Length: 274
Image (tube, rainbow, N blue to C red; front, side, top):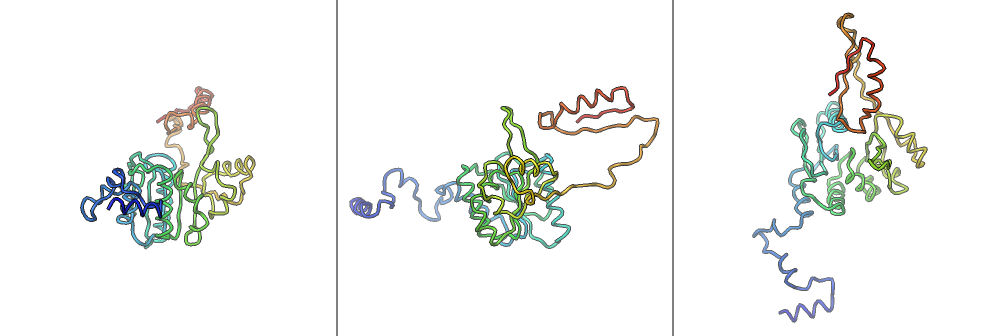
């Protein structure tokens, strides 16, 4: 029988020759089949089992925790729920770091693709296949490298069935001084593949348009404004209290906060820093 395999292999080298390594990967169907699946197959079939067959709005994010982008993702989801109460909404997280706020999403299907620790090329294939087959009405990628990679690679066929949006909010500066954003190093026609870049400020669009020739019209600014933020002071005898919230990191610009606090140290102002 081994000679027969050898003869077949001579005719078609693409057929796997039954070496020890090849046979180790084979299994009898229905008996421990889950352990013989390669990780991307397990990820794909797990997603099929956990996601609904019809999705109106699919959000793709690295995780859902306590950051500003995470809060904006939750606000976008809440906006869809307010405008379309019957919409089928799902979110796929793409990084291995655990999410802490997925439990706050009522009525949203969740799939944690990052938990499978796929290599990037396999993650792109799995996520791209899911979007192509499920055909969600809208896909919104928020700060997910994997999500950006999928839209960059498969954007043209995917947009035939889905509206494709991405969001990012800042051009970051890495510790070595390099400037970086999720929109860097994309294909020249990336902006033709998506419907728009949804962001919360005008600076990122203007900067990328000036530095890289990005089409400024591709950037749509959504500002989350609360009308009741600015209120009268409860008592003129009490100092004005300014709350600053953010992690102690260079991206949060403590270098700006400290000089401002020093300028106001003789004024009737107190800073609460969290």
